[in-house]
Amino acid sequence: MSISIAPLLVHTDDVPAAARAAIRDALSAPSDGRQHLLETAARILRDEAALDCADARELVGLPAGGC
Image (tube, helix red, strand yellow):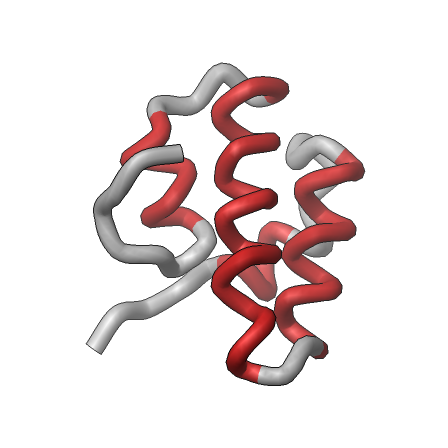
């Protein structure tokens, strides 16, 4: 079982606003649309917060993969 801290990231001012919005949308989206939104959030974290892709994916609760 994977644990996601995505719900906490929504309330963290250090997280870029666009990533927070994507995470917020993912948390309220139906399960079939959630992964796309979390992948978007991971890419934003990679690009705007200078995180490694693997770290960004892990933060939002996604398995290892590419951004």
